[in-house]
Structure formats: structure tokens, C-alpha cells
Length: 385
Image (cartoon, rainbow, N blue to C red; front, side, top):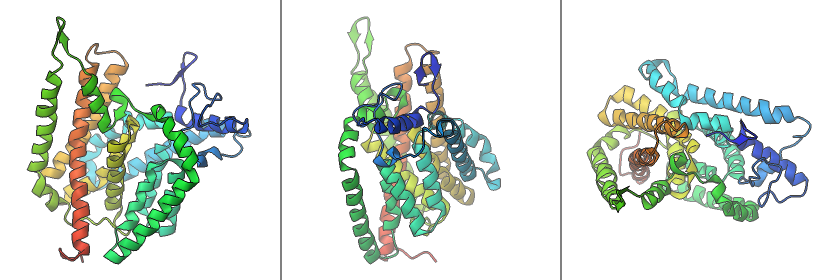
């Protein structure tokens, strides 16, 4: 899905719009309302921090070309480091499929800010330094809204008193961020159509609702659109219920030793933070498909646990993630290149159906994490030694 300008594809389009907004701001424009410096007059849909990039006119080649290449290289290095391990050699082929999927390729080609946030998430998962992690979350949250959710890693402590005190600090942090950006946040949400995904390029619960709402089936001028409600019931609701029912007990046995504290292991922290972002964005925002890169943050823990336990749920969980990325990639490629005429709506429904299957499992595991952590704090389960 290239951004085309004067007959040619424009690379790093999501990064250049930020740079162009900085240039227009210097000319006196309110870039949250208009941004004529951008080739498509796209308004600024990020935080105020990204409107303070210095010396763009002095070093245009660096900012417009070399910096996004560097960020893309770091991002791909982070993913490769997270996935590829000598002990996981049998998964390497599937890892390549994940890396060369549409969400990863698109976020690199557009050089979207999600790329930087993923890098920060990786550093936070690797580091146990409170000040470093808090600083990275602060920078991310001022740039975009949803990274403020990463502060949840500080809430989960070893006792209830610490949880309450940290929660109060974080509420204050939320209020300060909101106060600092309130005016720009109001303008930003007025521009929400600009960062709203659509069809195959959407990753959102609202995506499938919109598709089913507008999907029509007519044969010989007879409306058979009622079939979509049967589809929703028999191919979405019932399978989701059966999948989660089948793996209800296995989820607890698969993740019963996982910790979700700030001092947890890299794979555990990365899983928990990634799933927090995925669930929030999926159910509250309409996202472009490149936000699916955060699903890759789930893989290291799933693989490491599966190597130790070899259970059916972890195998199925990983297979569903892989299947989801394959379907997303193939469907986008076929539709974007007009290789399957008239079947685009069906591929779109298939993509969003698999998304829902996966999200239901991610939510199920997430709820287990929260309840298990609470039980440990209240001494309802033995503490891990």
C-alpha cells in the first residue's frame, strides 16, 4: 500500500509527515489543523514532543533518508535478537515468515513511530533500571498516547501496599501527561480519521463490526446479507468459545510460573507489555495493520515455555500467531495487486476472524496473569522461590 506522489512511491511517509510538520510549525501553521508542507496535507497526529526536532533544514539528508534507515535497521535487529536463538533452530523458518510479513515490512517502509516504541519496549523489557524505563515510557507517551500503558509494569509489585502507592504515582503521571498535552490531544482526536485503519489494513475490533455492518450479499438481485449474522455466530462466537474452553486448564499450567513484575525476565516482561498494548489498541482504537508488530513481542516467551514444556496450548498459540501473519500478508498482497477480483471482502472477513481468535487467547492469558498475580500478593498461591 504505497504512498504515491507524482507517480512515484514515497518511502518513509509516516516519518516525513512529522518532519514536514516541524517545518510548517516554523512558518506559523497550527499543524494539528493544517500541514501544507506535507505532500498530502496530512495533519499532525502525534504528541507535541515530535514538533521540537532541531536542525531539520541544516541536515535534510540525515533526517529524511539516513535516520529512518538507521531506525529500521535497529528495529529489525531487535526483532531478530528477540526471536532467533540457537535453541530455537526448528522455528527459524517460521520466524522469517513473521519478519517478512506485511505489518513488519509496512512499519519499516513507512518508518512509523510504532517502530521506535517497539524498540523502547524491548529496552524496557531488558532493563531493570527504574529511571531508564520511566524515561523511555515518558518520551514514548509524549510522542504517542498508548505507550503510557507500559507503566503497568511498575504497578505489579510483591505486596499490596507497593501496588497502591505505585498506582497513585502513575495516576499523577497520567494527569500530568494529559495536562501537558490536553490542547493537542483534543485536536489530535479531531484528526482520528487520519490514523484509522480500514478493511485489510485495519487491526481493530471495530474493523470486523464495520465490515459485517456494511457487508452485502446479493445474488440475482436477492439480498442474502442475513447470512453474515450466521457467519458471526457459527464462525466467530462459537469457535472463540470452544477454543478458550478447550485450553482453559492448559493456560494455567503453561503460564503458572510466569512473573509479571519489573524485575521479571526479559521474555516475561516483553510478553506482558506487548499484550497490554495489543489488547488496549485492539479494543479502543482503529489501528493500521502495522500495529500488529507488537504481537511479535509475545513470541519469545511462548517459544521458551514450549521448549521446556511441549504442551498443546503453546504449540497452538504460536501456530495461530503464525497463521494470522500469513493470512494478513497473503490477503494484503492479493488485494493490493488486484490478483483476486471480487474476493476482497471475503479475505477481509477471514483476516479479521483470525484476528479475533488470536485476541481472545491473548485476553484469556492476560486475565490469568492478572488474577494469578493478585492471588500471589494475597498469599493464595505459593510464592516462587
